[in-house]
Length: 468
Image 1 (cartoon, rainbow, N blue to C red):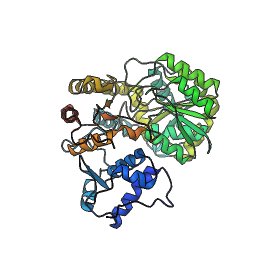
Image 2: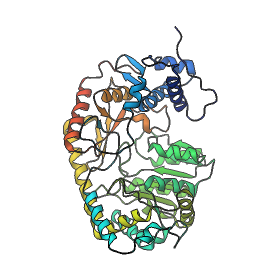
Image 3: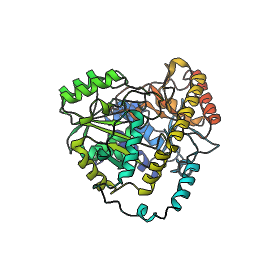
Image 4: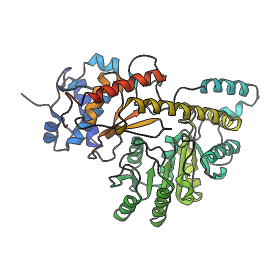
């Protein structure tokens, strides 16, 4: 019997993506017919001369894209072609009241933002000055953005203790755009970008597109370690560090002031630029000062209103070092010209009128309530979470492989992400999964999803205890 083995000749990118793409192409061409069982991961790893973790990650990616279906205890199979089309995730971010429970999306809970938007649009319609919100914004700097909007942004950043100056603020189309802008402003192809071992996955994709070399810190800790950072700076000539000091995704950890000061000291010693992703920074009612306060001359502070107010309001705030503000403004102009003025106007109004504070307070309260559900539903020794965060880092007991657990949860109607999705180095062993509690439409569905996860944990990995 011939064992299927993909051809990777001429393919580019990470090996796991090459394998996943080959699976999809062969499934579409019929080389891998519907229902065909794929080789065991260890066997395929041997045939391709790659690590077991690489093949495991490839199968997970192919499953996520809808090419494969894992059956606990039986193996991995090519999905039926009609099922692939029918069951692929929709691009819509609607919050359904029935069907699979989604713990994979780290978005804020449904709130009264729609009502606030209706009031703001009604007020705007009576101003008689809508034309300016539909025109190019070219005054003030290369990236556009009115001084009033930047003043509102500076006011908002003051809520977390950052003394932001409007002249060093750059408005972006969300935090992800802000991260891209920061990378464009401070790096060049060939530069080294340091990251935490587990990190926000899109940052590595952006870095690779910009021709950067991504180097994860060699640390056994799940949070940013100053000693590991210094060791990396001695080992490689790095240009910048990307990090999430508050409510880290996926681990939920928050750095204390002492560690932030130590990180800033290392960055100063090695002339390292810091890119601080503080998208969750507005959730904790009391919090440590941003990393940018410890090293303002070398830190890009990036946040947005997507987690604290509403995900569809694509407005980000980037506070840049003095010497790199113009470069950041230029990067906005190159990548999007400007964020939509209508959106920045809505965000500014909400900040000025106190609506933003009310919406953010709602998110804090809802996050706390859903975290309480998680603590009541799941084994406390397995749960790593912040009481004010949106997500849970669930450590798996012996007998469970994270990818097998993810597939088993999917079969039971709960979607989540395995720890490998956040690992910069595919060889990193992450025996955990991330559960996002905020995206679901109601606490009832969250409770139901957590009950399914609890039952799965209690099963002890039966039928899925194989080490892949």
